Each structure stands twice: as C-alpha cells, then as structure tokens.
Image (cartoon, rainbow, N blue to C red; front, side):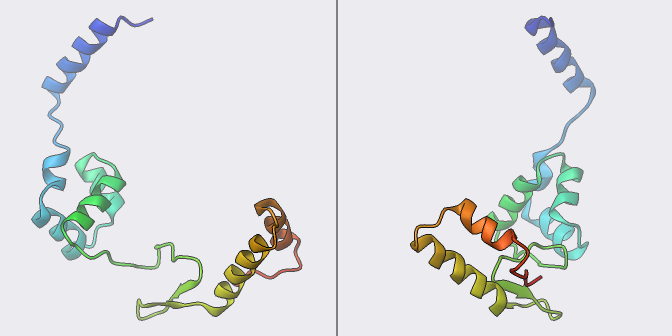
Length: 127
C-alpha cells in the first residue's frame, strides 16, 4: 500500500516539474472563439488541448454566449432531424413514435413493455 503522505509529496514534485495549464485557456472567451469558431475545433479537441473535460468546454461556450455549431456528428434530439442546410426540423415519423410512447405510458404500460413492443421487429425504426 502506498503511503498517502509520500504519494502527495511525489505528486507535488511532479506538478513542479510539469506545468499544467488547464483552465486559463478555457476561461478566455477570445481563446474559445478562436479555437471553436475560427479554427473549427470540436469541444473534445479543445478539451484535449486544454487538458480539461469536454463538459467544461461546453459549459464555458454556453457561459460566454458562443453559439454551438451543429455538424453531422451531432446527436439530433429524437423527434427532430438535421437537414443539409444545417437547420433542425421536426421529424414526423419519430414524433408519431414519441406520441405512441406517451399514450402507452398513460395506459399503464411499463417502460420494459414499451421497449419490448418496439423491439419485436414488427415496428420499423424511422432512421
């Protein structure tokens, strides 16, 4: 077992040797605008560069009012679809399924029963 005091001392020594500059970059709206909007880097790529989490970068984008771009890699919410122009529009087939799920829940069906209904192979997925 590692002695906590020696582990802490070793870690502090490493921090002196290696300068970790994680958040100062990500705290700058100008830096995020440059990387995200001008250079086209993804939140994941910026996070790797800054040595922080993708969630932290996304939070900062929102905090600084930097509008997120939605490319082909984005997970579009159920009931909506991304068209070539980049706009998100309602997707009637998925909305119909969502309405079915709500109706089945109101009828007292469990989530497991609903999942089995949609997984039986008779119901076609819209995507």
